[in-house]
Amino acid sequence: MRKYAAEFLGTFWLVLGGCGSAVLAAAFPGLGIGFAGVALAFGLTVLTMAYAIGHISGCHLNPAVSVGLWAGGRFPASQLVPYVVAQVLGAVAAGGVLYVIASGKAGFAPGGFASNGFGEHSPGGYSMQAALVCEIVMTAMFLVIILGATDARAPAGFAPIAIGLGLTLIHLVSIPVTNTSVNPARSTGVALFADGWALQQLWLFWVAPLVGGVLGALAYRSVAGDGRAPT
Image (cartoon, rainbow, N blue to C red):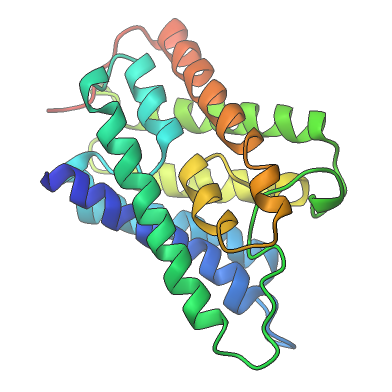
């Protein structure tokens, strides 16, 4: 249960910190941090939680990561469902807290509420096909980074830094395309509080990251063999 509680807490922080930076800070008139700041915020949430709870649960914070680690031979199938449930619940709780905070400002309207989208709801107007490819490839590369950084042969102690910076880079590339998911829990946590289109498009941000997570794990295993995380 401590593992599941850690995943809940860590995913809560990822959504509150990452999506909170987009909802509360990025659009602040004259002082907004911009999408580069949002990208860094997401990376920092993972980096800080990796050091805080990595020794408890492995700090997945993401159903696609849990599925990818399972495909990579690093995680037991018996824990997949409770991990994913804890992650989604943590994300939804953070979305609720963020909504309460954001709605405290006069004139608040939820709009996209940091949701992920394609077509007219893509920040850059990218198509569903472009969004699908982007999310699959970015999640795949995220799993390559995670599996490589936590390989028993990698330098010890630096994995959180590589993973956090990797997620920052992913956001820098893909925010214009989909507002960056690579994480079904993150997408679900804010979609529930956004306008109706966010839930209608949510399917893509479950399918693509899960497919990408498996592909990334298989790609890493094909080039690296069976490197295991330290135990």
